[in-house]
Image (tube, rainbow, N blue to C red):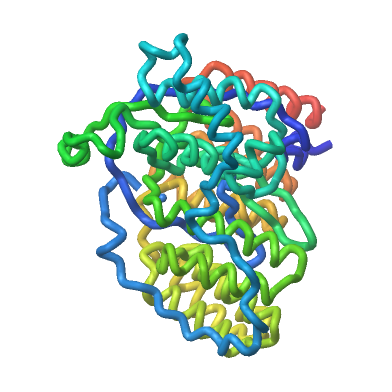
Length: 419
């Protein structure tokens, strides 16, 4: 019996536990990490050092001529993603301006409205517009973040977004492995027309709340997301859905739209390479991978993706060169290796996943998630004794009582198996 069954996909209908946390928020912006060729990061649907995306080199891809992908389909405009119906705006503003909210700060009024709304919300792996989300009471957490933005825009409250480190949720659809990121919305304690807004921005600490639709304990902010990057997540999610349903032409055009908002999106680079591969444009796919690796700030997952692509093309010598490059890459964030390990584990590549988890521990020997990954990998490799030892280290390296209890339960399961 496997004590770690692959059941980490949310139920089809899950009532949300909407919560908020008070800021301060420390400014931090970096680019997204990509996942392996057959794995797409959905924003449910990053590092500590502050870096402006404007300082990055634009990734200019040598994509194939658009004639290979048919006529451009109708794609919703960015502004319309946040558009609410007249009745939806009337209902929200009646709540917003009601007597009970007279002395409530604007950003907290939005939270109160969302709190009431999400009582009947059903989690669905769908990326929807604000209007669709509010009308259907369903969607993923990116859909809810879009709705939050739409409500905030209607009353001129400043918003923001951040991606946090958490265990991705993996699921398989149409032969494609999906992995979700956890994204949180930020509602600030000032509006977009505030004369002092600039002074707020120049400070390292800003006031407001983090709105979290699927709260997790002990989260670590990976990075902040700009408004344009956030819209890029929407189009990238739609592109991933198109790939799942083998609509490669549609995926191509949605990825073009993604790049219009975020020209350095490494996930989208990965997906664009796969789209070309699926269309039989392998030379272009090869160029796209190499250009992404050359210009992207985070090369870790692109390198692994490219290695898998080369093996599929029976270019084993080139694949070994990429593997050597991957082994030498300098990574300072242990969660980059953990995420890569999770991806390899989901693909049943247990020796590879263990290798990545060990790299995470080399950087940060106190990260319990890495020890858990090693324990799971060792169990699947048949080394029960080593799995128990790693799981005990995972338990030792967390201060959260609930997580300790989880690890102890797994240790008890392993002990029964060894009898």
